[in-house]
Length: 101
Image (cartoon, rainbow, N blue to C red; front, side):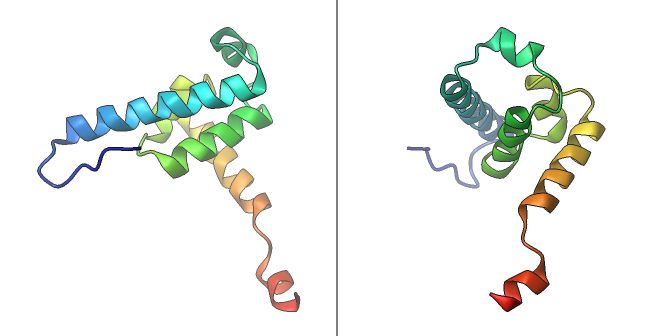
């Protein structure tokens, strides 16, 4: 369970908590994929697992795109931002398809 941080907590404490949560998520996903840290570094920058993990980190933590790109060895933050945009765009159902269902 995540501790609740209120307004009275410093930004540094919140960031440290977010970083710890991110590391826990990364460890879970690496374990599920049967990867280790070296394999995370060796895999392609646009590997689908890395992109999915980056999307999850972006959704569930307050890490910046720069921090995620660095931690997951995904190249520049600009290229990661584009990959996240494209992944989000393809995962959504177009509006006209939703209306017909």
